Length: 404
Image (cartoon, rainbow, N blue to C red; front, top):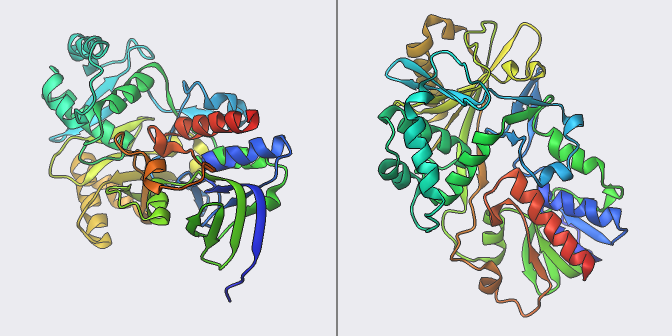
């Protein structure tokens, strides 16, 4: 039964992802009246981990970079007990495995193919210092500006597809370059007990948790009034949109195209530890559907029960149905690793939607054409859709609002 009531608050935050949670933390810390509305039954936005028979299944392929500068001021990284991926990755191409290891962290790695690419890579980064033009896609950048081997181009494309969650690599190369610099100088990590520990930690610092409303979706915003699917009407002096670009598009009917990106994840269990590399495997075979995979329990042993192994596989935009995807993924793995992959048992397959970045030529505030200046925006989508950008944008907005 739909309930109807009018609820008033100084600030109303829409979306309990990392940005919304962090704003709630700041308001709670400063005894500021707020309400936080979340359409799902849990907080964290795209950062979520499901526990299934003692396996930790991170939704999508999520990592935290330990050289993020801003978010480490908010998060207690020691408490998260971050576990590091190997810095680099293994390319699978035509049944061959090639290691590309980051020499900054493993100078003497055996069979490291990165040394063949050092001069062209140095040239790429040097040229980037003087090329600040926007408008070149990541794919175009790799195809035309990388004077590396074809194998490394395949490695870079698969890696950046996984990072950007963009199968076509249409995202501007400036964003890809920023990520490559971060990964070159830091480690991809996961909290010991799963990625959901990050939003859980922020949530734990909110004193007045009863101000967070779950399972309620905002349908309309008019000036200082918010209407939800439950029939409730919220009145606020200030409204903060801390949700994703897709929700903004729907609430304000903006007609922005390409507002989310889908990644399909498959989780398998097996008694066999047929992988021994505590990092990412990247698929360079153009006709395959797998983009990348890893065994998370090789990074943190809490991801699987004792004696069991967890395999996480990611792919994009497959036109196959779920049964066909499962069979095709097993075939591709078997070609590389042999009959040991027959031991794989499916735990779960699902697709997850992640933020698209806000196009640089779009000003949402102007598109909304709202007469009041009481609507504010923050979240990962305003920058590069990372954990860092979500927390940074919310911290900057909180600082501004608390000053004014």
